[in-house]
Amino acid sequence: MPKNVTAICPGTFDPVTVGHLDIIVRGAREFGRVVVGLIEQPVRKQTLFSADEREAFLRDALAGHANVVVARFNELVVDFARRWDATVILKGLRAISDFEYEFAMANLNRKLAPDIETVFMMASPEHSFLSSSGVKEVASFGGSVEELVPAAVARRIAELFPRG
Image (cartoon, rainbow, N blue to C red):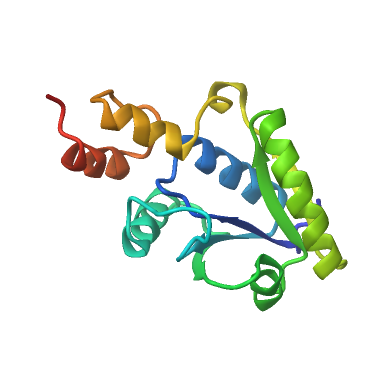
Protein backbone atom coordinates (compact mmCIF):
# COMPACT_ATOMS: atom_id res chain seq x y z
CA MET A 1 0.00 0.00 0.00
CA PRO A 2 1.29 3.49 -0.75
CA LYS A 3 2.43 5.29 2.39
CA ASN A 4 0.85 8.57 1.26
CA VAL A 5 -2.69 7.13 1.55
CA THR A 6 -5.02 8.13 4.36
CA ALA A 7 -7.44 5.48 5.59
CA ILE A 8 -10.35 5.93 7.95
CA CYS A 9 -11.36 3.21 10.39
CA PRO A 10 -14.91 4.03 11.52
CA GLY A 11 -16.83 2.54 14.42
CA THR A 12 -18.63 3.13 17.68
CA PHE A 13 -15.85 1.48 19.71
CA ASP A 14 -18.23 0.86 22.62
CA PRO A 15 -15.84 -0.13 24.07
CA VAL A 16 -12.65 -0.35 22.06
CA THR A 17 -11.24 -3.88 22.25
CA VAL A 18 -7.79 -5.33 21.65
CA GLY A 19 -9.23 -6.63 18.36
CA HIS A 20 -10.06 -3.09 17.22
CA LEU A 21 -6.59 -1.95 18.23
CA ASP A 22 -5.00 -4.82 16.30
CA ILE A 23 -6.75 -3.75 13.08
CA ILE A 24 -5.93 -0.06 13.62
CA VAL A 25 -2.25 -0.69 14.40
CA ARG A 26 -1.84 -3.10 11.50
CA GLY A 27 -3.55 -0.56 9.26
CA ALA A 28 -1.15 2.12 10.48
CA ARG A 29 1.73 -0.02 9.19
CA GLU A 30 0.15 -0.14 5.73
CA PHE A 31 -1.16 3.41 5.32
CA GLY A 32 0.47 6.79 5.82
CA ARG A 33 -2.27 7.89 8.19
CA VAL A 34 -5.20 6.15 9.84
CA VAL A 35 -8.04 8.32 11.10
CA VAL A 36 -10.06 6.40 13.67
CA GLY A 37 -13.57 7.72 13.14
CA LEU A 38 -15.59 7.60 16.33
CA ILE A 39 -19.31 7.62 15.58
CA GLU A 40 -20.68 9.95 18.24
CA GLN A 41 -24.35 9.02 17.98
CA PRO A 42 -24.85 5.62 16.38
CA VAL A 43 -28.15 5.08 14.63
CA ARG A 44 -28.42 1.34 15.23
CA LYS A 45 -27.59 1.06 18.92
CA GLN A 46 -27.43 2.73 22.30
CA THR A 47 -23.90 3.07 23.68
CA LEU A 48 -22.79 2.09 27.17
CA PHE A 49 -20.02 4.70 27.19
CA SER A 50 -20.33 8.38 26.31
CA ALA A 51 -18.55 9.74 23.26
CA ASP A 52 -16.12 11.52 25.59
CA GLU A 53 -15.22 8.24 27.33
CA ARG A 54 -14.89 6.30 24.08
CA GLU A 55 -12.67 9.01 22.63
CA ALA A 56 -10.48 9.06 25.75
CA PHE A 57 -10.13 5.26 25.65
CA LEU A 58 -9.04 5.39 22.00
CA ARG A 59 -6.61 8.28 22.50
CA ASP A 60 -5.04 6.56 25.50
CA ALA A 61 -4.67 3.20 23.75
CA LEU A 62 -3.28 4.72 20.53
CA ALA A 63 -1.02 7.38 22.06
CA GLY A 64 2.18 5.72 20.84
CA HIS A 65 1.18 5.70 17.17
CA ALA A 66 2.16 8.96 15.50
CA ASN A 67 0.27 8.31 12.25
CA VAL A 68 -3.04 7.50 13.98
CA VAL A 69 -5.59 10.25 14.62
CA VAL A 70 -8.85 9.94 16.54
CA ALA A 71 -11.76 12.11 15.36
CA ARG A 72 -15.49 12.09 16.03
CA PHE A 73 -18.15 12.23 13.35
CA ASN A 74 -21.91 12.24 12.77
CA GLU A 75 -22.21 12.12 9.01
CA LEU A 76 -21.98 9.65 6.17
CA VAL A 77 -18.78 7.63 6.35
CA VAL A 78 -17.84 8.74 2.84
CA ASP A 79 -18.31 12.40 3.79
CA PHE A 80 -16.08 11.85 6.83
CA ALA A 81 -13.50 10.21 4.57
CA ARG A 82 -13.56 13.14 2.17
CA ARG A 83 -13.17 15.60 5.04
CA TRP A 84 -9.88 13.86 5.88
CA ASP A 85 -8.83 13.38 2.22
CA ALA A 86 -9.01 9.63 2.80
CA THR A 87 -9.30 7.28 -0.15
CA VAL A 88 -9.67 4.11 1.92
CA ILE A 89 -12.19 2.86 4.46
CA LEU A 90 -10.48 0.23 6.62
CA LYS A 91 -12.71 -2.44 8.14
CA GLY A 92 -11.88 -5.51 10.19
CA LEU A 93 -13.59 -8.83 9.56
CA ARG A 94 -13.89 -11.59 12.14
CA ALA A 95 -16.21 -14.09 10.48
CA ILE A 96 -18.52 -14.67 7.54
CA SER A 97 -21.33 -12.99 9.49
CA ASP A 98 -19.30 -9.74 9.50
CA PHE A 99 -18.64 -10.06 5.79
CA GLU A 100 -22.30 -10.07 4.80
CA TYR A 101 -23.04 -6.76 6.54
CA GLU A 102 -19.72 -5.13 5.59
CA PHE A 103 -20.06 -6.24 1.97
CA ALA A 104 -23.43 -4.48 1.70
CA MET A 105 -22.05 -1.34 3.36
CA ALA A 106 -18.98 -1.33 1.10
CA ASN A 107 -21.18 -1.49 -2.00
CA LEU A 108 -23.44 1.26 -0.67
CA ASN A 109 -20.39 3.43 0.04
CA ARG A 110 -19.02 2.64 -3.43
CA LYS A 111 -22.29 3.84 -4.95
CA LEU A 112 -22.07 7.09 -2.94
CA ALA A 113 -18.33 7.60 -3.49
CA PRO A 114 -16.72 5.48 -6.23
CA ASP A 115 -13.36 7.15 -5.52
CA ILE A 116 -13.18 5.73 -1.98
CA GLU A 117 -12.21 2.07 -1.67
CA THR A 118 -13.09 -0.24 1.22
CA VAL A 119 -10.22 -2.45 2.36
CA PHE A 120 -10.96 -5.44 4.58
CA MET A 121 -8.40 -6.74 7.03
CA MET A 122 -8.94 -10.13 8.63
CA ALA A 123 -8.91 -10.25 12.41
CA SER A 124 -5.94 -11.97 13.95
CA PRO A 125 -7.00 -15.49 14.97
CA GLU A 126 -6.65 -14.72 18.67
CA HIS A 127 -9.19 -11.90 18.28
CA SER A 128 -11.63 -13.53 15.86
CA PHE A 129 -14.22 -14.15 18.60
CA LEU A 130 -13.99 -10.69 20.14
CA SER A 131 -16.69 -8.03 19.93
CA SER A 132 -17.67 -5.00 21.99
CA SER A 133 -21.08 -6.51 22.65
CA GLY A 134 -19.43 -9.72 23.84
CA VAL A 135 -17.20 -7.75 26.20
CA LYS A 136 -20.22 -5.97 27.67
CA GLU A 137 -22.07 -9.25 28.11
CA VAL A 138 -19.14 -10.95 29.85
CA ALA A 139 -18.75 -7.93 32.15
CA SER A 140 -22.46 -7.77 32.96
CA PHE A 141 -22.28 -11.32 34.30
CA GLY A 142 -19.19 -10.63 36.38
CA GLY A 143 -16.60 -12.10 34.03
CA SER A 144 -13.12 -10.71 33.57
CA VAL A 145 -12.50 -8.62 30.45
CA GLU A 146 -8.95 -7.55 31.32
CA GLU A 147 -7.39 -9.46 28.43
CA LEU A 148 -10.02 -8.25 25.95
CA VAL A 149 -9.78 -4.47 26.31
CA PRO A 150 -7.14 -1.83 27.12
CA ALA A 151 -6.41 -1.34 30.84
CA ALA A 152 -8.31 1.97 31.08
CA VAL A 153 -11.41 0.32 29.64
CA ALA A 154 -11.09 -2.66 31.98
CA ARG A 155 -10.89 -0.31 34.98
CA ARG A 156 -14.01 1.60 33.90
CA ILE A 157 -15.92 -1.62 33.22
CA ALA A 158 -14.99 -2.85 36.71
CA GLU A 159 -16.60 0.31 38.11
CA LEU A 160 -19.76 -0.21 36.11
CA PHE A 161 -20.01 -3.96 36.68
CA PRO A 162 -18.44 -4.80 40.04
CA ARG A 163 -17.93 -8.52 40.49
CA GLY A 164 -20.27 -9.96 43.10
